Length: 97
Image 1 (cartoon, rainbow, N blue to C red):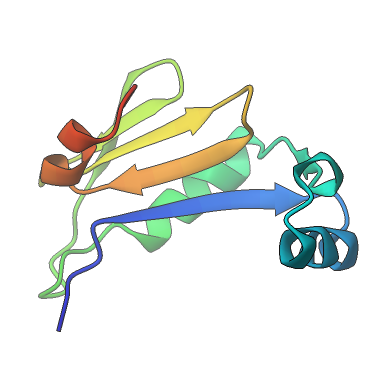
Image 2 (image 1 turned 180 degrees about the vertical axis):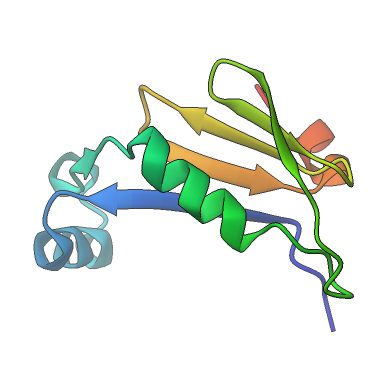
């Protein structure tokens, strides 16, 4: 079974309109809103364990960047309004991470 290498979180302004725009590939109507820091921390806490269930810790490594104790990285892109979480290996392959 393939392993998950990265996840992307985003918050739609209107989930029904977003889903319709997504199906139609209409980027202009795919409106996103900011994910607040409190919510980002909650999302990161969901990913605070490795595949064996061992607890891991997220540490801030700069503005809108976090690193997990196993090397995984998270980045919130303010302009794009997306939170990306990636394994250490995958993050090296993603431009701008």
